[in-house]
Image 1 (cartoon, rainbow, N blue to C red):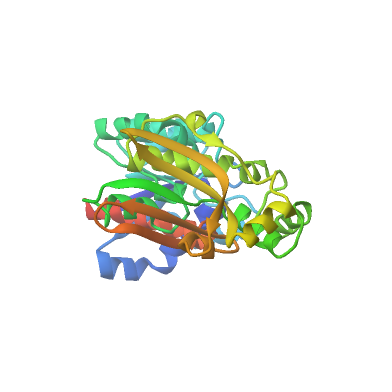
Image 2 (image 1 turned 60 degrees about the vertical axis):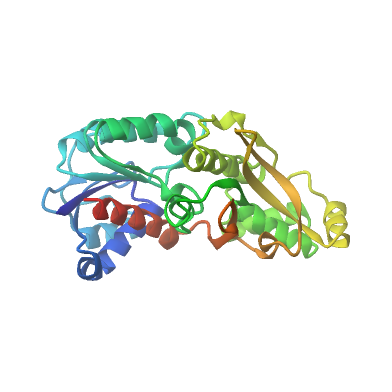
Length: 339
């Protein structure tokens, strides 16, 4: 089978997966029998394009890099029309995340699934706000709703829980789910003030101009919600997850942790207690002997507490063009393997 791929969004992640697919085309075919064409792309900045035989991705990457609109295979179809009318078999939803309403992504995902087309997404909106509904809709239409890229980018967190750890009862998931705040706490431990380190984080591109989503814990809360619903079947809403960011941590708090042989981390937690799932995001002092304490800078990590293996910790990048692109690739290959 030759997969016909569509991309909703051609920003950092859209260009990342395009570059990976372009560079690894022969390798993916040889190793996995994975054959594909990218036949449709919809982007509010660069335009909507469609060619049922495959687009000129190299040209599109060149044009996007130069900030130019797409010049070839341009169509006047809106996003929903291109989803439904194109010969795509799978859509990668890579538009911006809106954790209040789900943004346009909710509509994109719903249209694709109802049209019998798989969805692979790194957009936390649909996964955090409507996972049970989207999963049910996908099943009804015989397609997949794949979301590995929504939590810790390409580090295989969801795939680890549902794949290699299958057969284990996972009683608790606890970890560092936001690289921006982990970087900031690392630098604060070295002596920088909150305001100074935030400025540096923004200059380095770790934090947005409006850093609220990171520093108040909202980004981590979305990921915790996804983990609770996907791994533990909690069926909870995002506003049921208690949330506290790092904005109140002071130099005195940092020194207190040091004296106790601990360090501060913004911890997302999902735990099964008496047949009920409890989920939270809050700063915690972690003992230096715990694997999470050694994860510094912009790194992410999660510890899964299991009945058969004890604690299993995975550490890796939580963001990035190539890294999130890999998450999209891993889900595309999973769809391919299942035929």
